[in-house]
Amino acid sequence: MYLDLNSYRLPSYSFFHLWTTINTELLEKIITDMKHLEYMREFDHEQLVFCNEQSTGLKSLIAIHDTTLGPSCGGVRIWPYKSENDAAMDVLRLSRAMTYKSAVAGIPLGGGKAVIIADSHKDKNEALLRAFGKHVDTLGGRYITTEDVGMTPADLEFIAEETNHVVGLPQSSGGSGDTSEMTGLGVYLGMKAAAKSKWGNDNLDGKTIVFQGFGNVAYNTSLHLIKEQARLIASDINPIAVEKAKSLGIKTIEPNDIFETDMDIFSPCALGGILNDETIPRLKCSIIAGGANNQLLEERHGYDIQKKGIIYAPDYIINAGGIINASCEVGIKYNAERSKAITEKIYYSTLEVISISNKQSIPTSVAADKLAEKRIHSVRSIKNL
Ligand code: NAD
Figure (cartoon, helix red, strand yellow):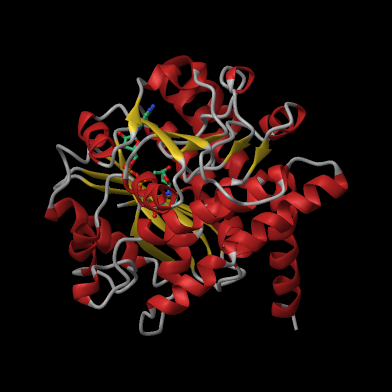
């Protein structure tokens, strides 16, 4: 069953007035829902779909932000959100970031994202994933799904039982496989570009780099940095991830100690919103470059980072390796060399964004948005021909 918020309408005033006296709780919920509609209008989202399937316990939201450049594509995240409202705001923010990410990466995809409200360790199973796949299929290719937090390429195979609109399947099934390998390469190259802008050369030998979160992306980034003899430190709330870091010879610290640690580069590789009023004043680094999506809690935090003289390599520029890899599978046979060649351009797009930021005295986050919007607007004008 769907609740498509595009077609959601408030009751008329008189009915609304009567209703306030009898159902305050529901009224509050509707007002909160309106915040999503306001957010959708402000950022021009095309569609938000709520998918509900009681038999499997599926509660999921699919957000399509913009399909100017191509079908929307972005991973499905499984996360135990506290409320449906939290999940809706997250999927709206994430889908918009996907539009910008694909635009700057130069690939023919629009921005979309999905979330499943569940605990991936306890609730994930074949029925849940296939139910989600059925809902993706009803969108007829306007949204193509892939892996995100809480998902594995093997999980995508269940989704693919119900829809063809899936990328990032295991290579044994003809797909492009784990996206985090290419994401790790892009994050590493983005760090190097930021280093070149900051220190005049991109050598990371001996630089201290701290990872917040040591999951798939941080692991794949660290493999490049270890070869370059960077000094790595990692923190994670999951003891298994901490052990994985230690097995690579990486020093580990408690998650709360990150902001007391001197470092050259801070690499957020966990969840979003980590650059905020509380953390920015405490950060002791020259560069921020990590894989996590939506690292700035609010746009204004980009200005706070700029004021501190820290170079921020915008998240969606340097973590685009995964979507680039997936794009190399949409409608064509996957080619790893092509994917690597496009991912390597992240080095130059990061340099370009930092250069725009310096010339125009604007935060790198704003410079990145300008680059993305330029491409979207130019293609939108062609579509009107
Ligand atoms: P993951 O689940 O493999 O790793 C995330 C890690 O962060 C986990 O080990 C988790 O325990 C840890 N973590 C969560 N909260 C933490 C905290 N407060 N402090 C320390 N550690 C914490 O996910 P991933 O695939 O490595 O993705 C990491 C980030 O990069 C996510 O924001 C994701 O959306 C983004 N991203 C991933 C890809 C990809 O290809 N996988 C692509 C682009 C962006």
